[in-house]
Length: 376
Image (tube, rainbow, N blue to C red; front, side):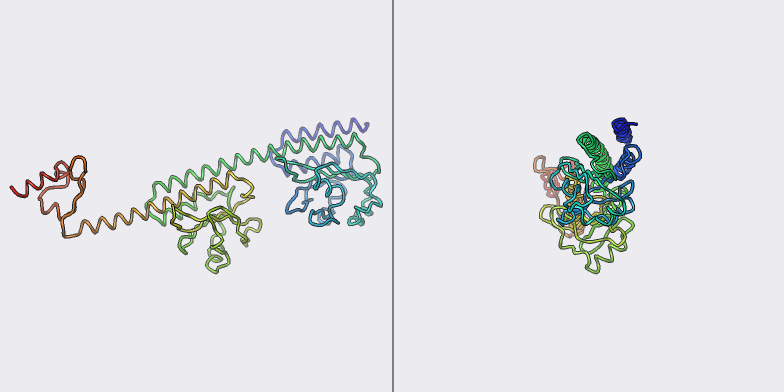
């Protein structure tokens, strides 16, 4: 089989993988495997950029056992001068057709000597207009990456970009739909619940979704309401002051705190307010990077405001009930009349006893009727 036939078959199989893909890590691994097994290259990796460093856990071929030893990071010129580092920095394809004595590859000399790697090509991978990683391909044959091979892998990287973007868009919509379901449940509780403790605990349980969050916490005046498997740990750390509640602001922001049960998740925090009244703090422990999606942030901010309104409604209702009890038990006669019809809308017990009517009877009478009745 000629090189052209082999490359065409490799590209065709990669396109079939792209059509079936619904997980970007699985997609990337299958692409790497196909480059090696079908394309005939000696190694391939798809590295995703995380904290300025390439994660090389997705790889195939002779470099797979070295994936934890190869460092490619934008924070150090020494480890960003080879093909992948350069591709990350300028967004261009970079080719080294003989790395045997290439100074840019000095940090990797031991691995090169052990594997016999001779040539390296790296193409940037983009998503939503941003460079998110690189496709790196290696061969034991110097001079293998000519113009045709360069165009081939640039086309493959473009297909990969489309596949990753499609998967992320689909997962984002699924995530937003799940979040909207939870928000609908929480808002229904906010609208109907008249018990403050039931509202706060139920809100945490409504919002918690195993696909979205590891935990949901409300700090209300020092009382902690929580849902999720890390509740006891979070409650203990808040009480010990390890989680600084003063860091919460009106905008959702990440708090530098690591849950002992969920090392990969840092909480987002926002104040719970209604107008100028501040009632507490809402924490969420997302299962992914919540702060990369402005729509999710906007939804949580809106929901936090709705919760503040719900708390306000319950507190005002309680105040109104207490005031009503005082009015009903006061000795003096007190009544309320409609300013348009002058008919009674509400009177206290003392007024009913004094006038000798039921409340239903008084609601059909005007203030003037009762005055006349008193003096006849």
